[in-house]
Length: 569
Image 1 (cartoon, one colour):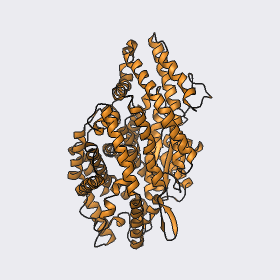
Image 2 (cartoon, helix red, strand yellow):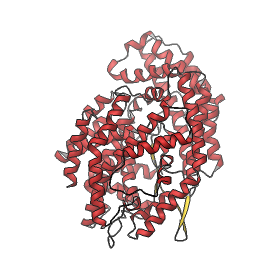
Image 3 (tube, helix red, strand yellow):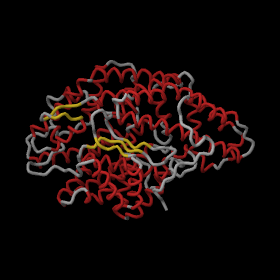
Image 4 (tube, one colour):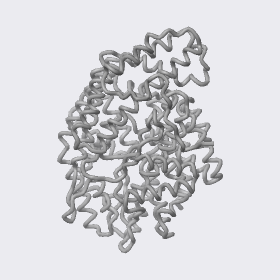
């Protein structure tokens, strides 16, 4: 029986009152582990638990530094605290982490550990040893600090519409407005504001590429793409699988995207469909507004999750009670949304930029799915066991988007609005695939050609964008904006190569939803059972536990697209 009554991992090695302040106070615990004599299997397991405890303490401290900084990018003390971790603590921790990894894998008693329980953990440890290079430590510190500059730059982006100032997230609400001129005004103002920071973002990205490429070469890799595949633990698929995915999207998804946009064009009665029309409804149709305030979003999400399964609602209630939810958009707040697992205290933190829009509801249930995953994996005995593959993490969140539709009546009392909301979500499930393919294919080119000019980068971006463009929307006259679209994608700056996961996971989520339509309780049981395994099984095994096949071949994509098309109709 799963419970949201999550308990902070008790400390037995690090003192209860200990706080991470500086390296001088932290180092003795690493030194103790490195120098400790291990002469029995029992002592090895005790050593592993002490190491896990220290990892949890350090990880949670780092997470809070980042959470606080993204919640308020204008407070320089919060930025300094995060930078202190990256520059002063992390570089000192890394050599110890490598030495501890080597102590574990080289110890003769390690072979006596339960193979089933420790296989993926030890595989990950060996991978870390293979990648570790002393000369990469300062590079990685610089990268950690530099990557956060994307959020600092983006947080300052605002536009004025109808005399009011809005963050770009808030201004997106005008795309739903029935006044087409207002939609176009909002679109152009948002894109023009992005263009103002083209140069600083180009410079930031070029600097990141240079350092990432150097990091890969130091570790003996031809390019950063191959290094990053290894670092991300992509043991179960290759770059060729990614290329096959791109082709399958063109072949089996783009026809559906064209169908969706043609339907939108006909529904709006337009001669030409423009980018600012994609979220709109015909004149006289009430804009979908699932909530008005952050509190209402929390309350309704708890109600929705509780109807799906009481445990899910209890998880959000717990997070709300300990103030682990920061949902509303405001000036000075970093863009985007995330769920941050907290390795020691257990209950994660959800950060997002809600502005009362339909997309915010989807972000909330998406991050809520990640949160459920955090709750389910927390009881696992080692911090390393909770480090699950990102592909299954996104199955957790994207499945919740689809599961939760069953009870969206809590957000929409009107039956017609409820129908429109579900239709919006299903259209989004399909239309996100081309963007995933674009971003992923762009990154393959970027890191295969690390030395290139801004002009060459833009040319390649436009080429890939065109390759996956629909044939319905009229983009004429917007080429300047379109050429710059990649700069809005946080992942390119902060978490490189983390994007194909969304495509793999969306297929998994559609498979979970297909199960759900046949047998709700069995699907939810499979979902919880898979997520509770954390990272203790391989990716194909986690998919299998969820009742899914780990397969994103063209045939599978076609089959799942046909299912969604049928559901939409």
